[in-house]
Length: 192
Image 1 (cartoon, rainbow, N blue to C red):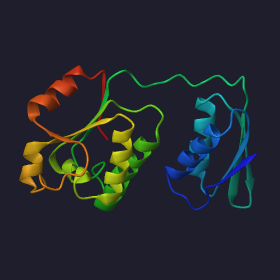
Image 2 (cartoon, rainbow, N blue to C red; image 1 turned 90 degrees about the vertical axis):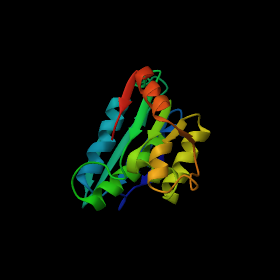
Image 3 (cartoon, rainbow, N blue to C red; image 1 turned 135 degrees about the vertical axis):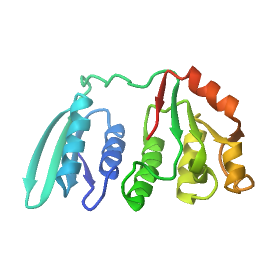
Image 4 (cartoon, helix red, strand yellow; image 1 turned 180 degrees about the vertical axis):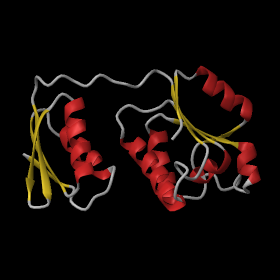
């Protein structure tokens, strides 16, 4: 049995920790401990969507989700299409609180770097270009994605506008024609 202690961890860490534990075994049990209902429900959803049998118990204020992985467990169908493109056009995710939006977009990029199915390309434009040039934690995640074959491209005009053209640390600098062509060829575009 692998025990995953995700107590005190915020989204998406309990899911990432659970996925890593499940990848370590071909069959067996993974027991995940979390301390909030949202994490519990997210881990249960992961187990259900993956076709694993699971059971949840509440012990005090800790949820324990026991996931059974067997050799006969059907593999989840890949949902990624051949040419998925992620477009990041802002340094925040959503329109609400700026601090929350910054946390969410950084979490999105980190979680993307932990996924098995990856997009083919990530495009950065407008204020999104700060992620390839200024935000060290995200640059690290983007380098992981690039090393796994994801093409990282940034708008040259946007980098120039923000004075970041000499600070790019990951990916390539591109132009609007290339950005449009990449999106036109996409089978799916994700814009967080």
